[in-house]
Image (cartoon, rainbow, N blue to C red; front, side, top):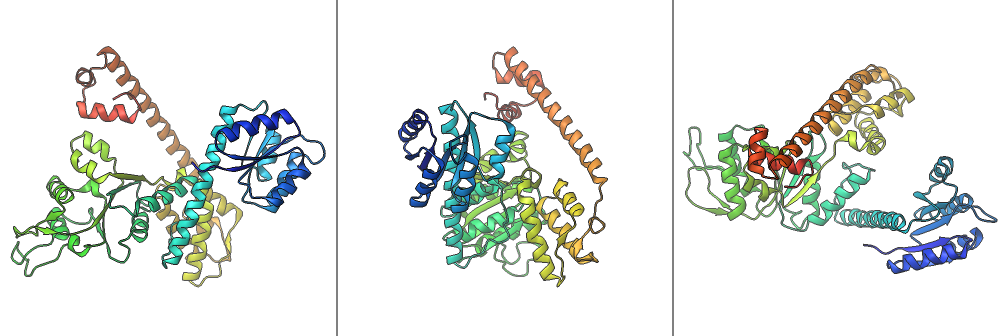
Length: 453
């Protein structure tokens, strides 16, 4: 983990020394200051990642020092330390730019968890900054992946780390979350970027057509095969193949795909000649493949071949910090594209957009804003330009009630599994019989609920 340069600011000598010695023992570089004026001079004369700042000090208090530090260098993280741990103090400090606060007496276990979290966040920001610089140097743009949330920052960071490898990647996420965009980013960052990325949607093709699409066919292989056709694997040679909605594959195609992943060779339909290609394999699904494995719908050996690295795209409703930047991006993009002088949304319209849960995820948000840009009569989009009105909140409430019911059912199922396991003294065969499910399904449920497997 990245080690930080930390400035400890406290007028109490024993407190400073205790924090200094502890943080140094954890490998961090620590400097001290006993008042606000010295702290600001120290910040001006050095480079710091983090300031641990006492709130109550003679002279300049912690809030004044915090504001001045953020003015001098907004990238320095500041944690307020206060014995007066009221909600008002915390809110005031956070509004002024503090990343967090802790109260006296300082619990060292709590402190190191906080410092480590800040170190991880700073490392992530730095790595993503270098990643973006690398993309720009190579003339690659990732402008369509717009985010502000920590979840997405970590995902983009992971994409940068796995891109250089040959490992198969499985991207999981609901429809509309941007799985194809993430696959394209991985390809762009990889050594294969100057070769093609070939995209196949497994939903849109019939089983026989999909086999021919992937592996190609020889002339006369079936009725209508009037000439040889090169398959998508051959087209992707040297590059990346992306199979979207891989959970839709039939058992027959699953077997052939498994053989390809194991042997890196295949045969065209109507041929017995083995062909070899060098491709990076990325797949995506909006289904729960583990559940499909447990139900015997999806092959477990294929599943483990696909998920060497798993990346899970969160739905938009679970990363609402990204909504404001996505809204602004789409407004600017579609206004230019449609040559409309649209400046934004009215307060009421923007409020509706921020409250909506987007079952269709980013794709739905994009569609809503494009439609609003096209039909808006004024420079500011109103609620009349949106496909929903305030009464959608009632529908959203009903959906949340259904979600709460599902959570209750999950809790009941978990309880029944625990009881069955206790009754059988952890004998999975007998527990599965009591529950009326297969052992494979029981193992899946044990894993799902974080129970011992």
